[in-house]
Image 1 (cartoon, rainbow, N blue to C red):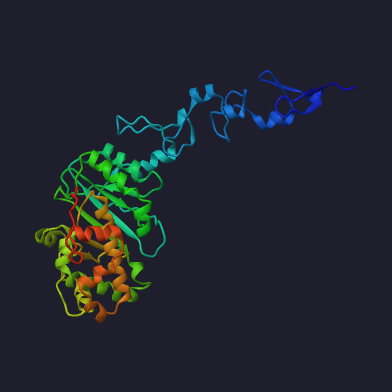
Image 2 (cartoon, rainbow, N blue to C red; image 1 turned 120 degrees about the vertical axis):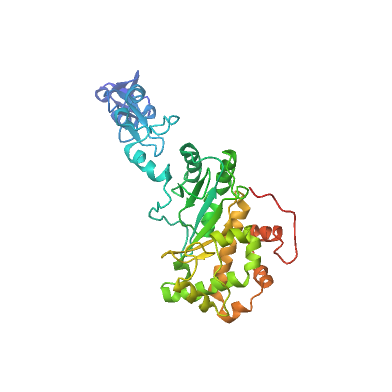
Length: 370
């Protein structure tokens, strides 16, 4: 009778000829193949659970510690001889693979003012919001930029940072275009603002900072001809309700004259748009900047590190876009501010309107801006 043995793992009996010894245990060939691998570096057999490398490149713990590491950004296994370290930051000794290291110039540095990467769209379109938030007082520091971007880009490539000559010791945080829902629920604004404050940045209280919002032109129509009507009504809304929007913006009239000038009231929305297209104005330094081919930029709002104010600003612009798209010129001309805010439903916007005494005579105590 043929001698047999019992596999230590599956507990089944097999002929002795199939017996495989590993780590002091008798295994069948199937269990040996399933539960062990050979170290890619030294060739030693190890338990799969003890693999310190990857599925594609299994490693024993000793070889991993002597010859390999993992990229701090993407997590991929890399050989130490092929590892990059960023020499521009003496405090940064984290390992990078080649791909992530060479992407630091896009994702982890302070770019020049004219830097404009290919946009990455997040959420459901076509109405996308791109935020430019200026912060000042904490320094134009690469280490600070990295700290902020490590939060902003933890779950995706959501933002980048630029130099802005209008700031004294600050940075400009720029998001890729996102739907309103994505800005509110996925972009980590609350944690990002807390980190900026912890790094001694200010925005509203700095006195130098703006909160600029780009809205995709495609949100107003497929063609320029389709877009002209709604955009003209946006311009008219800003002129008709200038005093209320000035109060909402937290800017002074003098600041707006310099950075976000008005176009001047006209009786008809199209008359304002025609005036803009003639170019007889302050260029991009206007309340609604139309010089960009893909976006409409809203520039009149003062910067802030108060998350409710950021959301309220986006929600206000979303509501203005709704009105411009749904109403005729004549209906818009008859729209009062009270009727407009009565249609606002987002809690952050209602909260902010009440704080600024802009919501149907329902003032409440105002939280301090940062």
